Image 1: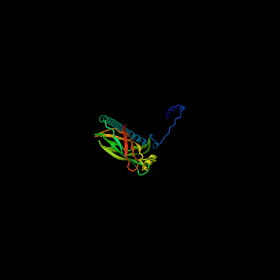
Image 2: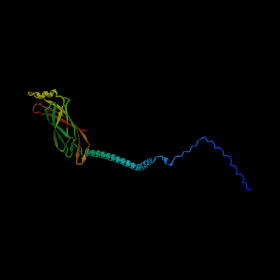
Image 3: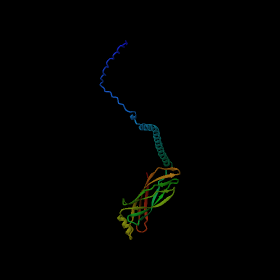
Image 4: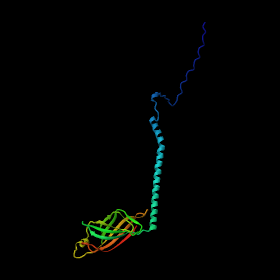
Amino acid sequence: MEERLPPAPSLPPESPPEKNDLNTYVVRVPKDQVYRFPPPENARLAEQHQASTPKQAKTSRCCLCCIVVSIVILVLLIVLGGILGGIFSMLLSPKDPQFLVERFTVGDTNHSYIITLNVHNPNADVGISYKNNSSVSLSLDGKQIAKGEYPGMYVDHLDSTSLGVPLKGSTTPKKVKESMSNTKKKVPLTFSTAIRSRARMKMGLLRSGTMTFDVSCMFKLDTLVNSTRILSQQCQTKRH
């Protein structure tokens, strides 16, 4: 007789899965569709940025240092110039230039005049350098009738320079017409001229600061017909 094996013990019934309020999903994605965050190109850009940041910071610091050094040098030059200008003025005490009216003529065109000025430098060791665009105006009876300018120039120590300054106005005053047309009787006229000139004085390597000279001249003419003579004049120079 064959032996009968005892029946296998029956497994306990599987318990039903516990209910969970949160549903869980498993998503399977093929390996060839896995993405990296951030993408590789962004990672490379980040690495390059990190590598370049120290260089940029170093460059910025160098630029800032150059700017600071330039400002300091500029300030030092301005201070040094002021100190030298002060020493120049205190030690040398240069004299103001002297101006005179040598000739006065009426121009070929209407409302134009030519004043010939004599500019003298009375200083023994100091030269005077006049800048461009110095203004000159001509007035009659307190009213300006013409104006002009003369170019820059240099007058050495104890030297004089003459230059003709053309002036132009808009109308010809009645007195000027009368003096020009009266050939039987001389009609004297008294003019005044105002000059504003910017200049620097120098002696060797020393240079003064830029200063302004205001010159006023009053002069009397015998007539404007043919040869004109200056009967009298008075000029004053003020430094600013």
